[in-house]
Image 1: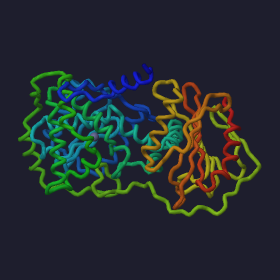
Image 2 (image 1 turned 120 degrees about the vertical axis):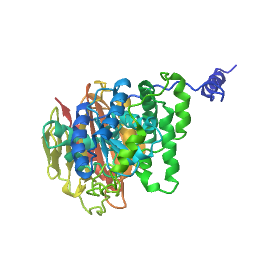
Image 3 (image 1 turned 90 degrees about the vertical axis):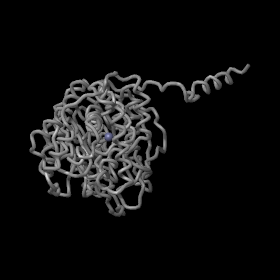
Image 4 (image 1 turned 30 degrees about the vertical axis):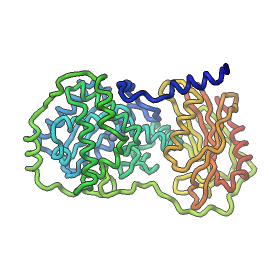
Length: 464
Ligand code: ZN
């Protein structure tokens, strides 16, 4: 008997799909993922963005309508036992069927959504789903993964008072425009928000299935007569597939009840919406949370040609950072944001993107202690997810940097120089409570020329 064969068979047994008649397994309730922002920064961001939203949108003053939406929202927050954030709920006079929540709690519900709902549970369903995005911190999680190096630098600066967080995010091309990483969710995030939202509904006395039914109704609408009305919602909350079934499968595990919660008369509220008359046009198309006019954000796709020559001085100068030091060519510039920096030649920067150079930063995992393998994997996964076409060229290898355990991983992605790919060598260093990292960048065609320099710079790193 070959032991190996047994192992293979056992594996096959474990991996076999459950028979169709077996009840679905209980899914674990999702928790917030990796995030470079703190909870209080989520709240701060939400407050700043809420000001922008309220300048752009007609917030409905009707007290009855606003109070109704708030009662539904607060019922979900309290009975759903959601993490404490400063949640508030406002109604926006806009015909599209949409609602959106900003990081840290502010939520806006379009009048179009109130009009389109068949019952209160459907409104509660959208709210519960949005609230889940807030408590699971999906917006800043996605932003962290999209541009972790720059955000590490930015947060370092913001903590020390370098302007508003939203202003700094805007410099990275992150805002509230269409396709913003803060408001456009992955299918995984959608599935998690559905599940978390369904539990929240059940606890609050609403039938969780109504959330999925409403989403299916929107999907049908998208293929119907007025696709524009649902375009924003369906684009920013992509269907993870089989929404109704996924929720029905989990129903046996949710708190049971009559599911007959009611905070008011929906028909009466729909009449109140009708009384508001025609919705005003949004004041500006450029930066709006629901992205109606397709504002492009400021992230550019630069067309700069690759410079013919990037000068590298053989004379080095020292850089003293907070907790570390290193040396770099004296004709390159080090632009620092306190605990992080970009070292690059002037020719290596393209509209804030690094085409040649090194970005150095640090991140603190929420657990308080670095796990080098998994924290590195998360960084890299995030990079890959957000950089279509990014590939691992060489798997992570163990090295030491200034005596600390480290990993080096070689990736390939698109260069900011037109028509070029680039090599990104990511070095992650376990510094106990923080993950120190350096990303060395050069166009693929030139990387071998720059590699000795980058190695020299990494070797010069000292921790204090
Ligand atoms: Zn969603």
